[in-house]
Image 1 (cartoon, helix red, strand yellow):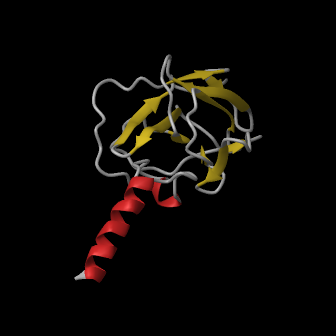
Image 2 (image 1 turned 120 degrees about the vertical axis):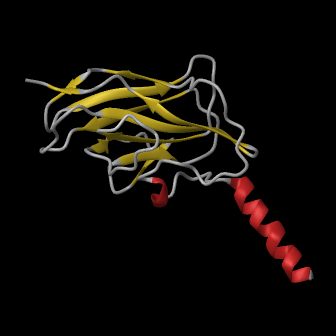
Length: 165
């Protein structure tokens, strides 16, 4: 019985710690954190500020994830063709020139996540379109405001990124 109690308590401690060093690779397609329980509700306050709403294969776009007056602890940012949180897809392009004080690659180089759970007011990034990039794309993020009880936001989406002519 004592062993069972230790296992149960240890499991809850692991859940409450969340992922303080970034999203795991398992989160790449669905972008859903493994944090329990969750208390998120209302409109997603997180937005993107992008240097362009058009791209060419091989070009870069600078961006910032933020929410006025809001702080957050974790994030996972990708670029893909869907702007629907129920869609699981593989991210496209790559993130380059990372700020090593707050972010690291995950999902190969197709996504960026946090390296610590310190509070942040924004995070800036550089995304490079793949040579075969085509169609309308969206920068998308999952943002974690707190780990226990978990408060996170799915589906922060940018304006459409359209191919340049």
